[in-house]
Picture 1: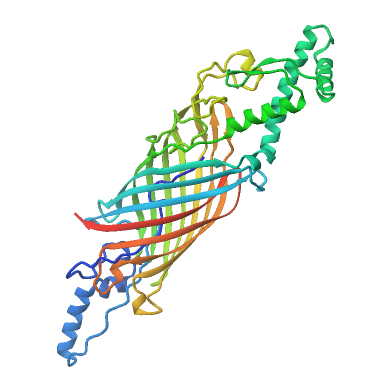
Picture 2 (picture 1 turned 30 degrees about the vertical axis):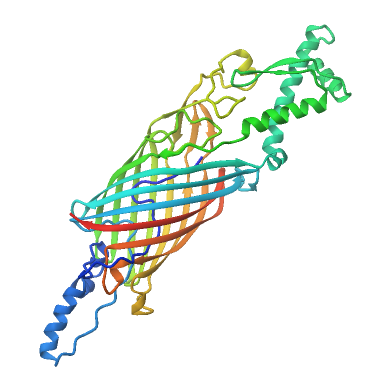
Length: 468
């Protein structure tokens, strides 16, 4: 299950701008223009520098000073344009992964391969020099999970499920032996049933009830035939199909700048994640497009412009549940369909059902955390021609919350450590500036625990500033 995440500017990816605007001057609409007192006085754009140069030329025999350097760096928290500006962003996220990480941090390959392409439209604007708003609308373009059957059959997950089903079939066989008077106690009958199967005898035909409440007819079979039948049943139940596409969970929120010294920023963000995704009626063989519950988010960011080219940032984004979601149970015979049988019967419970109906309540226990440590370095100090360029490096640690289906723990909280790196090309750094940038970012998985699919990500963002 993917987390697509994240409120109030979580989609931090990297950029390029190449379309010049005729007659434009470098009027920087971002907070960076006021990041340093000396920059606000002398580095606000070519128009001002030309005026200063013009005045100096009258008193110094037309010897104008060169334009101040422009550093393409952004704060992580206070990165919304100044009052009177909007920022429109489009972010493309491409994900791929295949390893599962257990509770001990060990990686296994059960044969599943995950890939996704998602697109996010984000609109941000400043209502004042301290208050800003955000609207982020994600859309899943493709969403797939494929299965390598050979690897799946060799995995511990497959073997444990097969052993459970084999034990269940033998129990039914033992109950038949007990009813026929061939043994007294059920435990003795189970020993006899296994002995008969191991010796090559055939198990009589039977009706097997699954945890979903569905039934499947098992013909009379020996050990090899039974093994083949259970293999087919388990592979069919696990085989995925193309996942759901469409709208994800929409983020809506705002941020407040608590402190701004010119070099240091402290920013607080609050928001909501709306359950607008395809979730409740998506079968288990398909990936959903969101988390399906109403959630709240809190983000706190600290940014420090150590020197003009370098911004260091620390951020924690916390997300918690407000209103639970719901998910329909899926068929075990056809995982591309929702379950229509009754999972509350005694036979279904005996097969492993939790005894609840087909509509499950989905809840999160506690807060998830998305911790980020970032360095953003502008390259203008190397050469004036590199004014539009910067580099970005991040360490990211995600601590997920436990997810419950009804009262049962379905997904223990994930722990994920990753690094991100990339670059941005900022149109405001060109000699003929444009209010546009492009970012490119790669995220590499390092380690984790309880990770369903350990994925790597590629982010591409294009952003445009517009006055209003």
